Structures are given as C-alpha cells and as structure tokens.
Length: 392
Image (cartoon, rainbow, N blue to C red; front, side):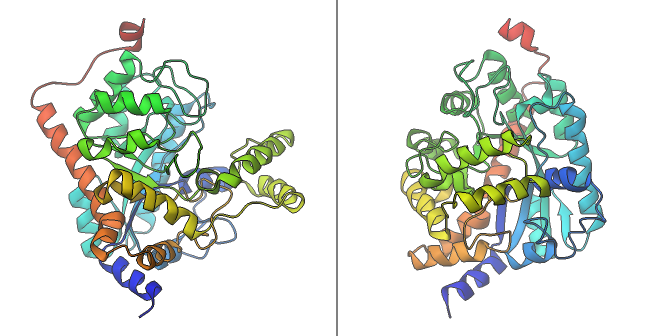
C-alpha cells in the first residue's frame, strides 16, 4: 500500500477538521450569495477551491466556515450576519453532505453519519463593534470561535499586520476573552500580534486556537506563531492549526507577495481580492515575476517544527482555502489533504499522531471550551462592561 493509500484509509476513520475556509466570502464577492451560480454540489474548480466532491475527495469531516468580513466595511455587523446566513443556506441546501454543528458531540455525530460537520468562526473582532451583547448574539447564531483581529487593529487588540497601538489587549479586550470563555466560544489567535497572543493566554481560562497560522521560526512572517507562544499551548490545552498560504509558509514568497499586493492596489483592487478581474491582474504580474512555489513538504516542515515545540496534542490544520489567491503544489484545493498526510507518513509520523492532527485535537479543544463555559456560567452571568468604562 502506498503512503497516499494509507493516508486515505486513515482519513476515512479520522477525517480532517479544517479550522478556516473562506468560501462564504468568496460567494459574496463572486456571485453575491447566488448559490445557484456557484452550486458547490458540482465541480467549481474554475472558480473556487471548495466544492462538495473535492471536500469528499480530501477526506474532510468537519469545517469551520469563516464568516469573515473586511475590517474597512462600514456595516461589519450586518455583513457578518449575511455571512452567517450564507453558511446556514449552504447547510440547508446540502443536507446529505453538510450537518450544522455547535458542539464537539455534534462533530462526532456528523462523523458517524458520514456528513461534514459545519461550524462557523468569525474572523476579526470588528464583527462585534465593541459590543459584548453583539458577541453573545453571534454565539447564539452558531459562531463558535472569533479571531480577535483580522489584518487591522481593533480598538481593544493589536493585529500582527498593523502598527502597535494597544500593546496587546486592553482591559476591554481581556473582558472580551473572559466573556468568550463564559459562552464557550473559542478564542482564535490567528492574525493577532504576538503581544496579543501572550495577553490572551494570560487572560483566558479556556484553551485557545490558532485557526490558520504556521511557525514563525520556519517562516519569519508576523502572521505566524513564535516559539515562546507555541511552548505555552500544552499548559493552556490549545491547538495551533497550520495554514497552507504560501506567503505564510515559504520565506521566499514573503517579498513576492508584498510586491503582488502593491500591484493589485495600483490597479484599484484590495490586496486580498480574489475576484476573476483581480486574478487576471495577479496572473499578468506572475508572468513577469515568477512566483516562488510552496509545496506539501513546505507545510510539513512547519508541522515538524510545531510538533517539536508544542507537542502532537496541540496541532491541527487550517488551510485558508478560498481566502488566498495561491496555494502550495499538492495542496491546490480541498481535495489535497491526503497528500499532506502521505508526506507526514513518509516522515515517520504515526497513525495515532495523525489522528490527533486531523480530528481528535480539534474536537477535544471545542469540548474543553464547553466544559469551561459550563463551570463559568454557574458562577457568573453575562458581562455588561463597555469599552468606555474599561478603556476610558
């Protein structure tokens, strides 16, 4: 049996829990949520990284669908609600393949039924507009993690890719973390500054996640996780979910990506745009400036290092499909996960360790957050704190 055959066998029993997929935003950008125009029951490879046939081929058993909205939108809260509505519509449209999930038990039930557990994660604290009531509203609608920032700072937390302002978390930011703990919403530290990571680990009483981040020691990009933070995950119980985005995993891609982003902006596009028009500009730039290419081995290098620092119990996968213009060779779309598992098998990773990476760790961390929330709710009610009160 080849390594790839072994990988597929393993994924039939312990499928991938992917921490971050931006399909809802891609559907908004490309077709304004016209699900007939991008019917994911059929092959969408010319438009998207994601459709149901490729999710099945990739051995995906659970997906956190990102309900991300851009931080510069003036109506971030209603836009986030539209994203949530999109996920709910996808689940309702494909009941034989997707199953809505809110808990670790729901994830296991979906696996037993052969369906893909569909969870939601909000990407960026701007989606709560400095309101703990809005945070609770997102949780009530099914959101089970929130990334504290996206690419820009919020009023109460610093982003990895913005100029430092708060120095990490403000007092209100720490209250956001505490309220997330009380709810059972996972604190996601992808995208945040290292100072924010450390402050959140100090403030939280529940395990955290990194829904789509890799190792800063392997690729020195501020979006990645420093070793001193990875070293804290065993005590916290959290999970770092390696991402596949070339500009975060391959050092040679960092400078190229910066130049490609400048080119997009010069043509009137956002530097994260993946619309067909923007991709034409990207491809023209790439013809003149060949793109450094990441591979499955590049991602595996991150996982090898992260396992050494944090331990196998604290690793997962968060590909960031449909949220990136480019992907590594062999991980071109959501059908590619078996190639990564095969690479890790060839590197000597055991099947029990791979089961933790793909399924068990991610399910455990959500269950642990639920346990913490159950205890906290017995001792305190919802927080009425405001940013004005706590931060002045």
